Amino acid sequence: MGIKHVAIHKALWLPPAPREAFNVDDVGMPLDRFPALTFEIVHGGTAFLDETRALLERHSNLYLTLETMFAYIQVKPRIFAKILGSFIKHCGSERLMFASGNNLMHPRPILEAFARYQFPDEWADEFGLTPLTEQDRRNILGLNCLRMHGLDAVDVARRVAHDEFSQARAQGVPAPWSALRGTALSPLA
Image (tube, rainbow, N blue to C red; front, side, top):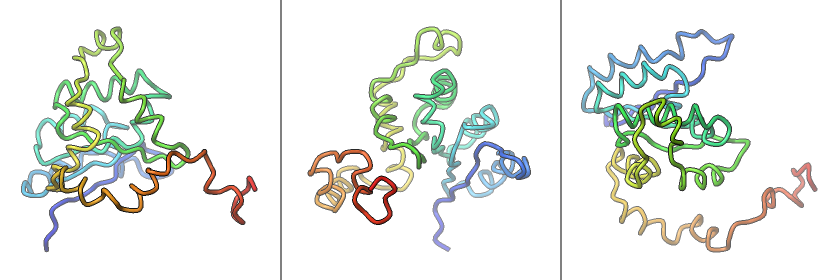
């Protein structure tokens, strides 16, 4: 059928939804049965950390999108260190991917915090973590996603060099909420 990649949404369990729907124990069998496919757990590590890490250790065709968890870098830094450090310590950074998934906050502050982030000494000692490397950052911030989808970084950069988003970036960073001010839909107008 041409399917090469399957993304599975697993997140924090929020009642009244059944808890079983968010467990990751139903992911192992498809990973085993379809080794030629890549699988991605969206919100990987936000819940069921040990189980998710065990899946990542056993299955080279599994990637994790760290959506939601990446916001912890600012709001729950100890938990961020524990989750990210655990994945890197046991599985490496080669199948971890950044995603913000934030509809209430722009991802820029999260990305800026990660650009200079290092595991604090006390948590590194407590969790047995090694320093975060620049290669870890590069993997997480885009190289792994490119690899998962079979894309070349130079080719992608060339293709988007003059797209509408590159043109908008060339104009500079607009003031927060400026796209909404003055419009009929804006509560700030």
